[in-house]
Amino acid sequence: SLSKNRCRVFWTRAGAGDPALRAEWAAADEPRPVADGRFLSRPGLFAWDRIDPGSALLAAHLPAELKGQGADLGAGFGYLSAEVLDRCPEVASIDLYEAEARGLELARRNLEPYAGRAELDFLWHDVAAGLPRDRRYHFIVTNPPFHEGGRADRHDLGRAFITAAAAALRQKGRLFLVANRHLPYEATLEQAFVMVRRIADDGTYKVIEASKGTK
Image (cartoon, rainbow, N blue to C red; front, side):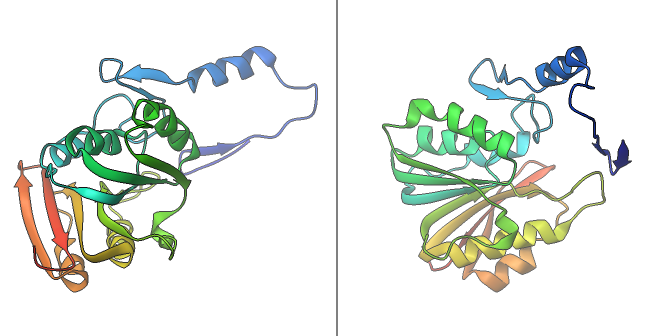
């Protein structure tokens, strides 16, 4: 086997594997209930065994008047999209973007109860590479990643999410972003948006609203 950055690659020959060990590893990845059974999650996803407190802070400050077409960037197992649909009854659709296929599969399952309330699309996609040009949104929610594989803070990932969101929003579209308080995203936001304001700060996380036009 080879190991690097806390990842490991194995190879074997047909018939030479250990069926019991293979079954044990497969069982470790089985989806399991979290948040008092409201969601399914699995090890290896971001904040897999709980509701991330930053995401919860963002959800608590979503305005009920959000409507139209929305997107959830870095959707994970679907928590923020579920909160949008619970809190904002006029939302018509949400596109969920997630680079981790194992998370996107669970987002699809977790949002099955909402299928009749809004149009949902689940896209296996690297947000940092930009969003599809034919999709435009009235609002976007995101808790962007800022580290990768045990490395130090990666500010460029969050900035790439902001840039992708700005390009995909309609005129006067709104971005709602949560981040660790120390992350320096304001300059990027101010370059891409007309209005930027902090709407919540609990000392650890900050929630920022950015708009491409005045409210």
